[in-house]
Image (cartoon, rainbow, N blue to C red; front, side, top):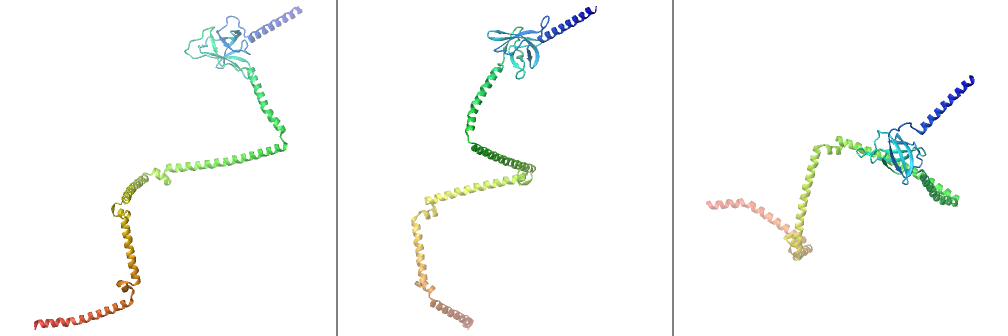
Length: 343
């Protein structure tokens, strides 16, 4: 009895293990018993490398279905997608093959399309979106890039090997000096930027003062009376400019008349005979003054001869005495005349 009991228990544990194993298998393989839910659509891809059965199907990053199978048709990979009934796809829907991470699981990303367009019916087809990035192609391109880098760096390595160590040291010293100069330039630039900031701050302060009407410029901008005075000054300056223009026009007219020989001044400037007559008159006056200086002629002798001056003084004295005598005798003469009239 004990032996039969142990065998029963072993059988029970075996059955339980088989059931657990079957359940795990069904879960892993996503096998469904009974009628499958949702509907099926197909997508054609140029390459479905790495895409396996039961791979996720996502919309906007949300897991909504699975890949049922991957087959080859018309030279392309035909992928059957199982989607839920409440997910509506439109004719411009597209499917994309993507990878989680760099080397992660491959899945299908579906964009539903534009609402209002015709719907995709069950067992319908959707178009392929942008071609997926192929890892092998990417690695091949990286290999090509590596070869190009190697081809570029190889001559540099050979050049470095062929260079004299002393020259290399000089080159490093020059690089150090250059870096030091760059540091100095950076410091100078920093100082320049600081000064520029201070200048802008000063300009902002000036702008605030002007806005408040402080200072000459502020009053000029904000004070209406200053504006009116400035306006009057400008008008006065404009009138003065117009007057000066008229004066210049008049001077221009006068100068044109002079050039044409019109008027007294024009004739005096343009007529050579008047100039010659004036020159002769000046020469005559010059000759006359020279004769006076030399004492020639009556007026010259009168001016230069001292004896004539003395004689003139004597004559004037005599005339003065005679006048005094006449003045004393005048009353007597008058009385004699009156007496003669009456008697």
